[in-house]
Image (cartoon, rainbow, N blue to C red):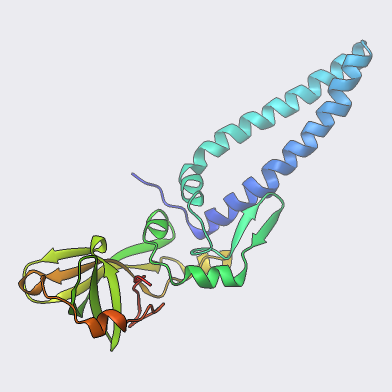
Length: 231
């Protein structure tokens, strides 16, 4: 059974991996080097032996504790691997948070990247969504769709033929599970992400008019959908 990460746990793991763990390693490593190892290598007496033994025990004990603590962070580490400017405002790094450029975050808002939030089950609830659209026809490479008076084109590789005479956008909406994640820099994904364009079998072979082929749009957002259409 997958053990999801709560906002409080996420904040604690961020602090552990980026501040506490490297901080203790730096401090204990420095003490071990200058108080234990170097005196032991330079002078051989009871005091240096004792200092070397004590600092070694402290360092090894901490590393052992850290090893077992890190084993509890499996889900956090797995999900943290998939964080991008699409889902978080900053990258938590050692001793600092590197904030992404606002323009980069804005650009990610209009990419129908379903994979990234799908790999973050602790943060987002993945919900299938579907909406009827108007099929305007196709050529050898693209299908043309209209939604809210906006004409778009899509590669046939992104399309799927289905029975009937209606066309649809299908995709997913990702709802943030706990608003406390917003305080950790996570982004509320408010729009539907388009995965497939379903084309009706009854009119699948309809040829698009040359006027439509030459007059289409590449919108970032249409009717709460990120269509990610072809340019």
